Length: 296
Image (cartoon, rainbow, N blue to C red):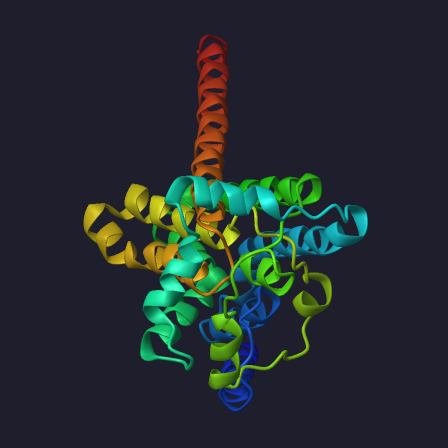
């Protein structure tokens, strides 16, 4: 009886979430995704199992986001010129300007939606892959979570000590050529709203350009797909980070150097956590071997 009631609640909650999102599209934040996933798994009697795994992941992501939201009040020494000069030294002209000259024609095109929908996958795909790893490669689950959290909190430390303005803000201040914040145009074209959520209250930080955590998360996503599921699935996953790298620069959200830094942070997070886990496994094996003679 209890399981039947749980399934009814799960189905009702899932449908309610979908209807709300269709009628009032909003940014898919971690707290909303946690509620949605809990309802789905309630249908199959696994709500508690999924919450035990996702609550720590989502909880620490929200803690990171709350820290990130405090940065503007802790350090208001915003850096503008370093990122501008870095991109110009690498490419001659700002890649954002070049891409907008090629692709932006004053109104939203079909590819703008493609870039922005990839941008909106920032939390959806990492949480989705977390669930997939839990179900199919469970022994790697916490390593996956630890890698994302390592990247997130490394990003926070950088935001704290090096708050950096994105291209759209530099353009608003007249420091670079006029550019359009295309993501805002797509936002309004899609009819997306700031649906009330915990994330929306704790997260805002307009000077968190360096590194691009969109680039970092999408890179880390691809690394784990390749490592755990092989080359074929990685080839299918590869367009996601590529769309993020190009799209965030084109839309005026990041400089190219931000995306490159995001890739470096993803590699750092993966390698550091992998090193720690291997050291831990080696230590546990040595401890196990040391106990064997005593057990005989």
